[in-house]
Image (tube, rainbow over the protein chains, first blue to last red):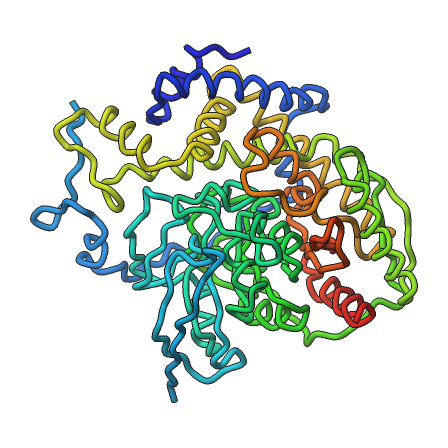
Length: 89
Length: 432
């Protein structure tokens, strides 16, 4: 069982704002969904997904990237060729 | 020589998010054919939103590889189609741009998440469209709208420029009103692209032929299990009988891993989504964050306002499944279950050529019919196994139940698109 506090904690980690009214709704839904996922408890062993895989390597070749101004076009708040971000501290 | 086309048609089903009214196109196998593109595939200069408020106004600076291929084949890209937000849904109701309706019955959903592409094709607005299929998002709307849809093998079509939801599962593929058009669009987009690290360098698809004689068709009992509407099951059984009458050999079989497939799919896709969607913070594109607030507060607020409920639910569940103490219980077990699904397909394909069953357990839902997320997830039970294993699968119309279209699903070996398309063509011609 997950609690409202668990959901609020995950929301903080994932930077997903959740309203108080939604916390109740999400908690109930998460418990129903996680109960369904419980079927995986009866799966024997762990992992195994890499059995039929192999890595393919290529040389690291430098190629031109998109022009600076093209990249900045989609930012709503560029300044002097930079993108503005919220303060970190 | 380039040509021009005008495209100005009413869109009563809300199939499109963005329409391109004047289109340039060139000579080629798709010359002048109007083609609709799902709105999670990047199109240079044309708004691409993924059906989300968080990307409203985003204009990609480059084309996805499939768009480059379609443009060079002469296809006329007439617009970007509506979809469940970031591909997360089975109805196209979770779009920030309003729901798309089903052209067969506008009180019903077209399926999802490529519902806009399917509706645009089914209503005759376009001859063909591109969708994407992470857990059935091409096949489901093809089934619900009565058209043909193909999810190619993982690695057959480049994902370069596809805005990621769950990278290890998703593929771009065609939707069309008949098998020939579906195969034509597929033949133009399949191929190697070094910009997609999972792309494979294989020979081009062979020309479409009609072939079913002597093919061994496996029919797993689990595809007709609990939750499958008996009326839908009956129509699909009749379709399989028709395959037999056309010369196929029907082989009853079993896929025990189906028991775990849906949970494995959702744990995997939500986990990948929680990582992929971390990039939406409003800084490089989308709505600008409040730079005066601390970044946790600013990003949380941007993501609360920009993402819909289903997207936030999946990011939260994915973050939970990957969090310390739970990773072994959910994600690692889901990968073990995924391998069981692969093993089941591998075992079955030693004795059969194609696996057949219903595409969806029901016909199209009524708009607003299902609001409980778990009930909605259960509708994907028959489509997710192909994504988990990476094998190709298509949906071809096979009749109606409750007055609505029903799709027959044909699943093939890795890279055997030609074989399932050949069987689908034989079925379509045999049903005419």
